[in-house]
Image 1 (cartoon, helix red, strand yellow):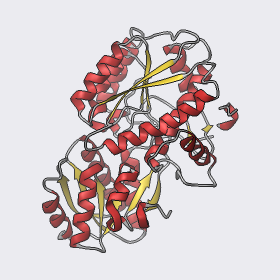
Image 2 (tube, helix red, strand yellow):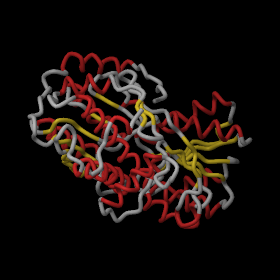
Image 3 (cartoon, helix red, strand yellow):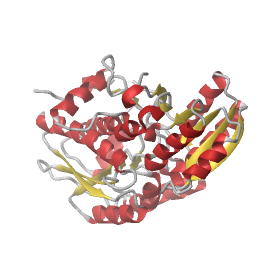
Length: 393
């Protein structure tokens, strides 16, 4: 029988904190209000996690992938006896990538005394909407799926793992400068996520001495894709950074390829859902994408091999992706934090044990919870799409 033990995990890299005035305000709320929402989970009962994510809608492929990755990890964990003898139950509500629906879902979950924490909630606009309520309540908010700085609040009940969008943009821009592509345009989704990417890319270009050829917003329904692609193609840019996800990303890649087949395109990790890659077809070949987790198909990385084993055992039909791998890793980190909190699980001892979690190595993915406001991983690697929507590196 498989077990998850601390030996599966040992070492890490610290992440950068952020300190905006809004974050300081939220941090004050957290310390003042953390305990009213505190609960003690009853020994022997399942540990119930609440989640609001996009299981449908424009970014449903991303939400489903992260959910399935986590589901594979929890299924393997439960088959091996759970955490400290207790099963994990993931209670998922679909918000269709709608911030109002997400906020309503989270308010319902916060009011449910059987829910121990919120896990892997999805999407920058949704997470920005729900965070004030979450921080005020004090329920643990673990591994939100966003790289936005707005999610890096100085609150002890909020735990970010993935590298930020700014770090992804920084690595892309640094690489473009290294290979001599000095004139760069940015296409960005006209919402909180896109604005975050555009800002990070612009700051990185300024630091690295690259010229910004154009900055073009793209509507979430793709209604202005053709006009935006024409503006980008005529800007004189040698490369375009795509701060896009879901349908707008797919439509933009196809539109740009139709206008300039050889234009260099770089996307962020949210572009990596298997369904999106397949839908790109030949237009996706050569597109570079930054990733914040190891390859789900690697045979040399131990956590990737474990993911492949547990994905297969869970009987999931979709092809494993980097996005699913992220959900899996988040679940594995959570399992270790719960294990270290001990059999007498409570909100307070979970929060304390998670912040004490240092130098954790899942087997090729390192985590360090250093301080509220910082993400626990700074891993960013560049990959490239090959034929049939598969990554070649």
